[in-house]
Length: 244
Ligand code: NAD
Image (cartoon, rainbow, N blue to C red; front, side, top):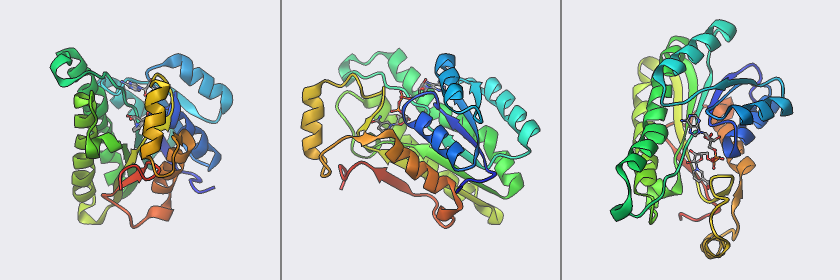
């Protein structure tokens, strides 16, 4: 029970890595508030574990975020962990990328993380304690053909993570901010990747396979728990050795 009594908000919790994290955190004793834009998936999550609170929430909607945060604070009195996991892709080569695809990915993946953290950091500052986990990607570190928008957001997340690790820890607050950089993980986000590309990618990964959502969720768990109490401002790769 590594998260006993902790109130944890997870975005993008209806699918893939976020869903695995919601289930794992709940098993570890956390009060999980699972947020996602897809109501249907939240209903399924609730059926799997009815201890989890679900919240239909778009991370681009600042008013809705404030509403959710007020609700959680009124009900539980605190917020210990924020996992900024929601993310989308709208891939195209630079010369073909539409402005709306650039804007959509920046709005969800980058501004969404800013929106969530700006709403929740004041509560953690009042408590003098908290853990914020941002989801970057190997693509934010070494780029990827066809992912101008996505790689910009995932690199931006690393900058925000390091900035917040410094800024929110001022005056002795034990607020830790870290990022996880997953490699190539089996989730709905990657299920449309053609098999020949998966095989070629697996060849480049020292562990020679894609990762499972639970393998990323377990790193979120470590960073959310007090086991990582002296770790802040770090970017932890969960990529089977892809970026070495
Ligand atoms: P996924 O598509 O299974 O899950 C993403 C979730 O985010 C979905 O449930 C979706 O509904 C939700 N979401 C989308 N827009 C939202 C919004 N505006 N507000 C709230 N929720 C929203 O994908 P995943 O693979 O589980 O991805 C989780 C995170 O991990 C993402 O940030 C992704 O960029 C990152 N990541 C994934 C991989 C991978 O290989 N799967 C690799 C590196 C990083």
